[in-house]
Length: 329
Ligand code: RI2
Image: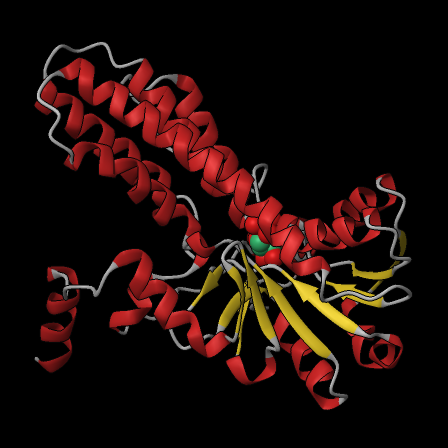
């Protein structure tokens, strides 16, 4: 539970808790929720001092980015909104409006990006294709649904995605749109892949070298697809590209509680059992056919160009310098 003080309205803590507990989940949805939380924080600020307001918004930003470590969409969305404080705002009212406008512009961008991804991505699917998807990615689902709406008859294999079973959500979403779905355990992928024409998954983070960090199990699916020369696409908004990786940062992989894997009673009766529950893995660029973004479909190795265009050439941060010094000493 995130410690609540009187600082932010309850809704902001609620969003932070819901992201941490995965009640709000999916890299794009997390990012939009964080922008929404900053907007709520700005709207409900009760003080009267501009500098204090800036500190308050930065504190809210810190709270939100601390909730989950892997999806870079979260800090990227927060940075997008914080840009409001770098503009020449000289009054509290102007700063408040700037934060609200930036948050709204991020949410709007995210919605438009999904529509563009659907438009570009559906062209990769042919009538009669069998597609495999993993976990629950709105970006991947938007591509499949768009192709379905264009009249292409598809069959989708959705993996259960243990331990949190996001594959159930994917199945429900696709069935609602009238798409044929078969739910499979992810351990069956190498058996099933022979029936598959293409794989489409989402992303939590895309690194500068084109490697994709996504739900645990993704890299095994990519390996199976690679073995049989099955196309493997990643559908993602460009705000999941990590500027930090351009200067050598490693994407942190989230390890979640053992209780997501085994029941409390089993844990109690086997105190010496160690349980690891990594939530994400890394798929190397060589296993990825293309990355479907709102800017078009790019080869994974072009990720660095997109990052540079969006975020500029990064200056080495003091944090990174600090880390380097620590390593040397
Ligand atoms: P969209 C999810 O992470 C999955 O890894 C999914 O592929 C990715 O976010 C992207 O989802 P989690 O929050 O943004 O379930 O495409 O751990 O919806």
